[in-house]
Image (cartoon, rainbow, N blue to C red; front, side):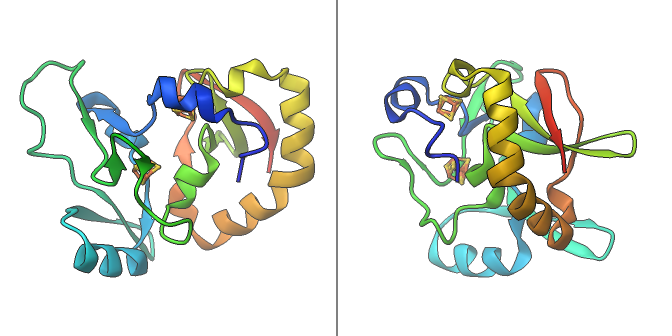
Length: 166
Ligand code: SF4
Ligand code: SF4
């Protein structure tokens, strides 16, 4: 979704975004419940099913994967191939990951498309360029997805910058 903005070379060196600390499990990608039935059958991945109002969704279940109580320990997503990157097809890859390093976040009554400042690839762009791109190319499809899958919305967190309201 953001391939025009991202650098494959930077990603290959960085590999930041597919491993998770126990303190940042809220960053784990969310999968629609129907996608999980297929993935649980075809792979060894474990999921935890969660509910948000009338919507069910799932996240990879990393509990039990941490070897220490060190909050700096990172555990990879079960779909990360350390040589080739994400092993999921474009169809199966969760929207959260297609949108990364952008996220949909809520601040008070506002739904915002935000950007992680932890991604070196996106940080090479000017903020105003990103805002124009988000307004023209992302606002409509992201809003449509959020209306059908509202559980992808996260509370505004430190380390994120608001780009546009959606
Ligand atoms: S954080 Fe950004 S640069 Fe790093 S691997 Fe993820 S998308 Fe690529
Ligand atoms: S689903 Fe793929 S892109 Fe998303 S965190 Fe897991 S390995 Fe990374």
